[in-house]
Image (cartoon, one colour):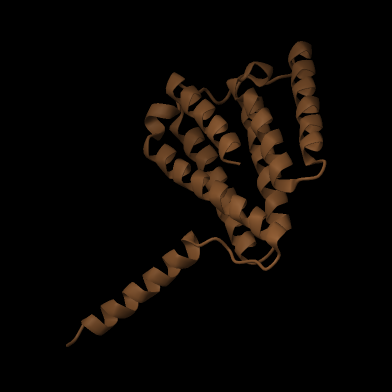
Length: 188
């Protein structure tokens, strides 16, 4: 029995899947192509970093379940954005990308010490990314909602309504978070 024919088909199938995944979506509109290229690059970086963080989760997070759930949710958002971008829904994918990162960041801030969270600096990165990816007045929009979020966190904390920290980051995690934040802003 000749298995070379079957292994050749399998190799072609695997090569086809990898080519579709690693290749930037081809879109006719130059403006949408630029956005799709940036989204593809950023989501690929996020996926790679997410897989790396999953492999070192015990050293990064004090609670492994929280770490895996946070990293897993970010990976799922990145995969959804890539899928939408490949389907030609680049504008929707760009909005979903920036808003989902903002939502995940806000949830992490609330659950990890609120106004005193070390994750608060990620709002600057989100403002830069939102302004560069979505263009127009998006940077002002994200600066405004980030400012309102910080003021809300301060108000909730000063009134005593902020919950006790549920997520605690180790010093290694704080270093990784700051490096990723700077890297994503720079790569955008």
